[in-house]
Length: 399
Image (cartoon, rainbow, N blue to C red; front, top):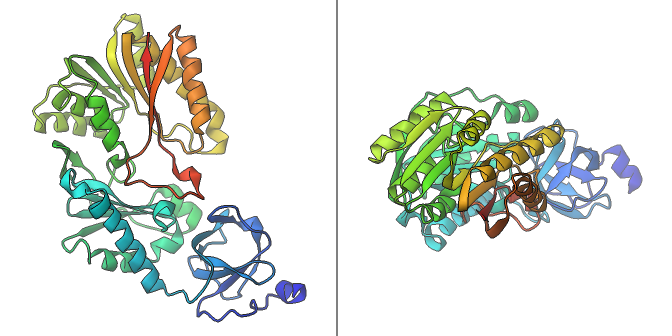
């Protein structure tokens, strides 16, 4: 068998009409790295759905394949069986929609939520967000990108009036090897827990809005009554506008560096009829200036962009988290609350908590952590892929 494997012969028993890949070693999770592959069918191409076998030719699973990426296989199933792509994608889409609609009942409270969350819904390399009638498909893998037309057709069964937007970051396109030209720029207005937001499905960060913070926005608003609230890295104003509209905050300041997001933040405040002090500034010098001014707040929210995007940037990113939290702790009133967040999947929970403790000590504050939270339930993560639990939020009360 070793001779057949090295010669590239098909695994014994392989009968599916899709290419095969043979592993050198098995993975502990649903991702298989390029170095773990022994060989592949001569006709296997990047973006193909392939049957995967171990080095003994035992069925291992079905995956999307891309040998040009370090992550060469993203598993769709464990075991091979009589895999049928149409049936597989139809079932996964239907299950994901049913979970959001029937189990979570999200349609009752929001027009914006995640319909498919990557590996958490068994569709690795794909995220789908709903904004009213718009469904935004964001692709992280060539294999999923090649399924775009099929995915949109299947989604029409659950969202018959859907209009589709396809997105992919420049990084994903470069690493995976596909090209997706930018579409026309447009806005959509959605309502979330009674709060209105304009969303840019064709641009901005992620898919144009942060659905993952929906539950945290509502929980933070419940703490805002009568408080002076500071929303740092506010993007289009989610936390701050919730605090002003639902939380009856005494005053609300939103700080955002990106000029386009800042403009949308101001517009969102206007459409909700709330007064927000919107500031277009970098968070670090702004917080230092507020400290120099002896300014104090009862509730501060830190929700920065991903400060650790790669292993190479880990050291600098950790330092930024430390500095940002230290500055925020120094601005809290006695008994004030800091909600500090990290969306860096490369930063483990324990490390984020340690950074927060160090920041509190550096600011000379004694701090209680009274809650931990993460993304909303429409962002499930697979038990065998804990990296999917990317969003971390610590609720801290400073003495």
